[in-house]
Image (cartoon, rainbow, N blue to C red; front, side, top):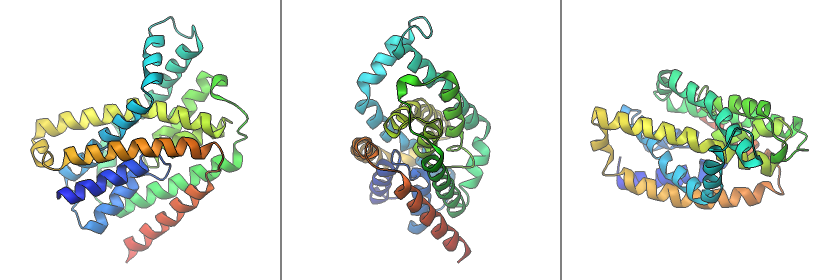
Length: 267
């Protein structure tokens, strides 16, 4: 991998991590187009570059996260902010468990980038289409319950295995619980932080222990910086977009991209 490759991956990660079109699928497709082998170091790079996007998320929502951390120290469910903090914990647990238990299965799929990309694209298309068709979008974030949080957390597992857009799965889960698009999107952003941060730290420690970090250091820092800048802009754009637009365009895009990957796989 070259510096130019890392910049390109940084742009792709930043653009697609929060927009519900599956960043991992785009990275895998780019990996195939660029002719980069699906090695262990490539897998580590694709996980670690998410740390740039998570930095953008933490910066964009720093006030929210700070308030949530302070509120979490109060007695459980004692205020609206405290309830939201606990709902984030509840929604995060399923994805963290899935990430630990299914890591080997997920890494195995990375051996066939086009296959995993097609799965992620098509799953995202199905979730987004179903959410728009079935969700009533009649509730706001303040009306959330622990059951809503648990179900959205289970949807987030789709981003781990078999694979989908993380934001798309979480937003879709929220909309299927009848949250409006802005509320579902905001909660999806908030719950993505712990999972992405845990995955990035876990992979970073593994890369250090295995010596892979030496292979990645020449190219990774620039990719992280690019993904952080582009990710911040993407978050801002999507928050404005969902307030007045449906998600069908993303579903159609993911469906078309998934079919393209299947065609390339059979070529």
